[in-house]
Length: 82
Image (cartoon, rainbow, N blue to C red; front, top):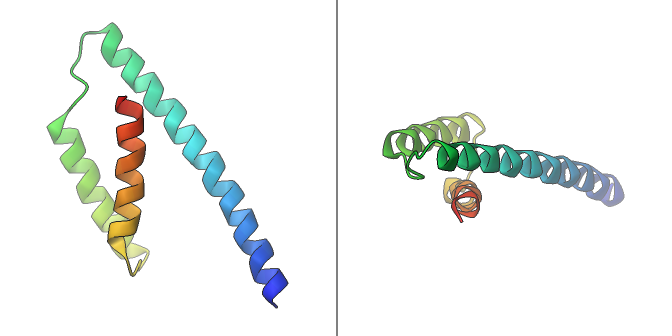
């Protein structure tokens, strides 16, 4: 049973890595667009909207430690802003 669970985790990790890569790529495209069009990097309204969405999605997923998920998501956002 342990081997099956470990295999399942590896498959999920592969999917997560692929999705994170896609998110970073799209985020970079947004940053490039903002720079090209002289738009501010920080958009308080959008970030507030994202935070609200994260809260809703985390609650729906019944995550026991919402701070962990939000930390990961905000690190992705910070990476794109570099």
